[in-house]
Length: 437
Ligand code: NAD
Image (tube, rainbow, N blue to C red; front, side, top):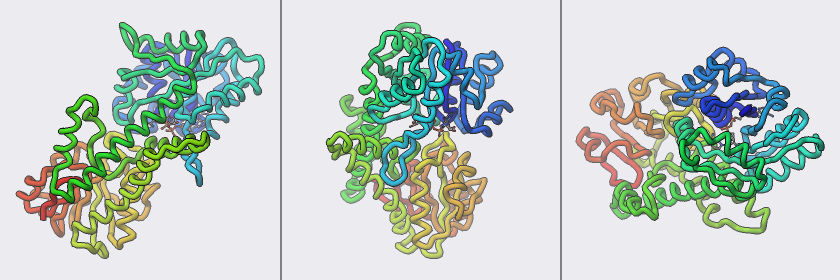
């Protein structure tokens, strides 16, 4: 199969490289010339574990290449995937579809022969209809099927998720379209690839419903964590106690600073807007979003509480800035409102992150950055552990205590055990567990 992947970001580059690895002929297209130039030099513009080797192998095998010009790859393709960004539109929270529609228009002009145009970007219900309308308007002669194939990969584990997915959702009623997408995903599995065929609108809704459900699970356990703190219970054990029930499941029950990242916040916002457009109210999702928004600044108040109530003039060392480990992605990271809250309360903030510092500097230019977590902690009045990078999971606690001005640790990911921190003489606060003073 010949594939053109339009948009070479976290989703497009991983999907393109994995399809090439399945044996397909893939061209990844991006408007961003610097991205394509970097890829031509053999550099990967994002941090995603294993992606450099996967791209290098497939480029060497001549199954994967890169360009800024979609004309030829689209003309040659059996399937064209749209994997451009769909950020929140400024002001109202709707998904911004400008990039998707611009891509559809450009693709339409270059189509030749039968082609399946596949929306991989996360898009509101009905976007496929509009993509199809744009293509037919721009190129009435095109022999095209427009399908939805939402992506469920997680940054940090993207290659594994793409190659061993729980399911693949293919949204089209057209048999030719189903066959092309079935053939593209067939190498995934020796038996039956876990492909679920649905109507296009259903596929579009599955993606938003999945993300909203996961965001709900996180927010639910975060609220239970707040209650656990008040009643003297341990939320980790509550999560385990409920998660062992198969009807609930143990994933996404880890209490923390609130969800962030490139998908959950924007997708819950967009889903609420879709529902409003269709005169329906998703009250649970609305609450999830509101609770989560409040939580981020509440985390700054938690830090203030740990240092005795007043952050003015205090130095706070933040460990971990990216929205989760194993990515350099800073989009809507919980660290951003947290740091802003700390600054608002008069703290001096410094930070360390294993790979996210360059991205973080764009979002948080006013803080000091360190290349080493112990240097970052030196002289600090408190450490806040925000992202549970593996580098922070077994720190030398005696050394930390020695270099800090006062031994206060606020662990927003429950990485350490309260008894252990008490034994090392720390003032320790975590999420939904007893604090140590
Ligand atoms: P991204 O911002 O990393 O990448 C998008 C890329 O598209 C950019 O490189 C941009 O330059 C390029 N682009 C925009 N318009 C273009 C055009 N007309 N032609 C060619 N290139 C163009 O975004 P992402 O994180 O990869 O997300 C892409 C989509 O996938 C979004 O809808 C997102 O919601 C969805 N998604 C993301 C994830 C994730 O973990 N990041 C997971 C599942 C789904």
